[in-house]
Length: 98
Length: 134
Image (cartoon, rainbow over all chains, first blue to last red; front, side, top):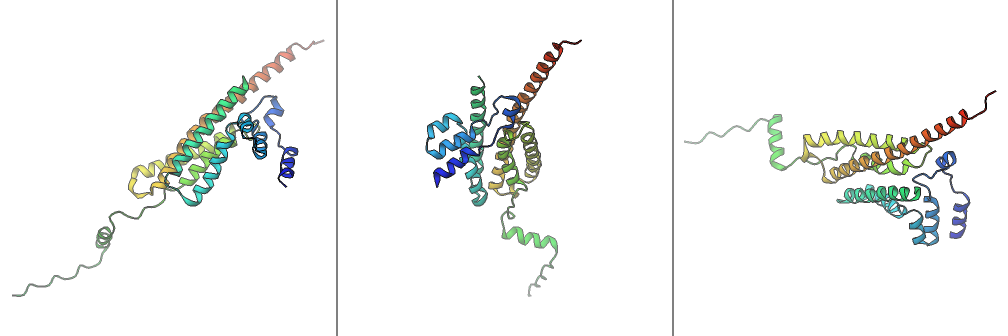
């Protein structure tokens, strides 16, 4: 069941319109492959492919929980997490460009 | 000689406020308006940045909306700081910083897109000028 889902994801990956138009990578390139690697259990390869994926998953799940339960320090944690995600996206993009 | 009894205080809006202020030290706190929208829009501004063709434009729109709402909420908070719950204030502040970071990243992506566009237009122009005219 899990492998069927992973195979379906691999067969139906969305294309990057920016890459189609210009042939250059965009800041989000690699995120789908990294997600599939994470589902397969290869965490290190997933981090190498797209380091901001795991903090982004944490960000969105915590955002959903925080909107429901309204933690005291939730806003601050989300802000620091967001800054980490933004920094990782930027560093990853610059490293992949050069 | 008996002291004359003082007549009861007639109810009027000022006396009701006095009784209210005596019963509660502070008025009940309310949620800062739009604080969750500010937080959610600020956080969503980065994934939107690279999801579309023109990287940076939808993200810029989302983060600017978030910043405008955050400035309005900041003015409300400055007028009356004690009126709002601390959770909603921290949501608003976090969302404001997320919006600012989102704006910076989206502007960078937009600059990259514009640089590529200029590069490709100039490339197409130089190829066109080399075309042999009759």
